[in-house]
Length: 388
Ligand code: RM4
Ligand code: MN
Ligand code: MN
Image (cartoon, rainbow, N blue to C red; front, side):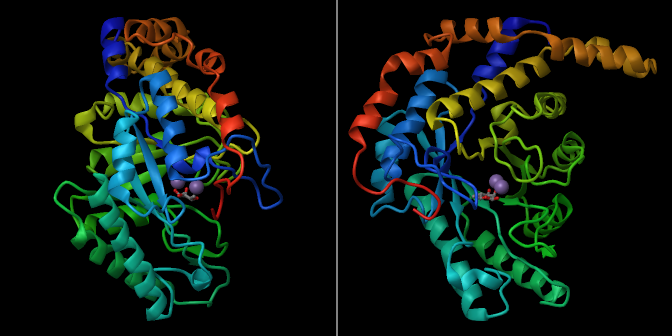
């Protein structure tokens, strides 16, 4: 696509969802460094997410994590979000931070614990109903640390059972996205370790179950654009948790560690017509900002996704097809690299100006005084963060 107007139109139609937990404090198992001005509740997280959307024009929804974002009245929270100009996005159940879940949640050997975890998943569908959310985003910390600790086969049966009971509870306009992760918190086996396992469960469930690809959840060297292409081909690419990683599940800002990988993924998505809203691929961020200020880090992340996507949209499809069908390896690769080497920042600045936005959202954030305001106003109370 060489037509700049078409590139801008495609980008304008591409929403990028931010995660409520990225606005709260986070850290490593060694230390959480608290920041000033961090939200104390779900309302304040939504207020911050709305600022990211106002400045970028591209982040119109925020994902919730339950119970971190539990409120008395979810319909009220959704109204608050709407007043701020955004919507509630994916609902993420948390079945990993209760003492009962030491040996797993829906795969736990004890039926009482499994029931408790399933009830939480079902409660999260109630929250979807109350907030208008259409995505239940499932990640399970379930797994084992030692060979023989539990039956791998029995755990798969328990997982399938919980997924199918949850699936049956979904409304017609709701879907579930099933995330996988290679390891952590367990180190011998995870019950959903990879896209193949996720895919197989989703196929057994039906059309409204799809795979969620968290870019930080693979073995080093995994070709993510390949698996994304295959999932899309079979109608099972439900969405992304974008972030970047150098080693494991680092949850760094998307596009920071390997912007070329992000470009390659976006390129395959463009070719598979998966960027357009009709494709129903949810573009979500799943990040933690341990050192950097949270709101500008999320703005930076949204801009990074837009930059990679703009470059992918600029790939000369005709030249690429000609080089590929002619077997011209170097020319085909050069077409991709030409697009990747393009400085798309002026194009994106122009797109923002045309939409009445500041061409430089990060500078606009720093000028807005918002950071100073939240640092002054949000004193006292309990800052949000892991476990809060
Ligand atoms: C997991 C996974 C989930 C996220 C939690 C906090 O590693 O990425 O998507 O909800 O972390
Ligand atoms: Mn994730
Ligand atoms: Mn993760």
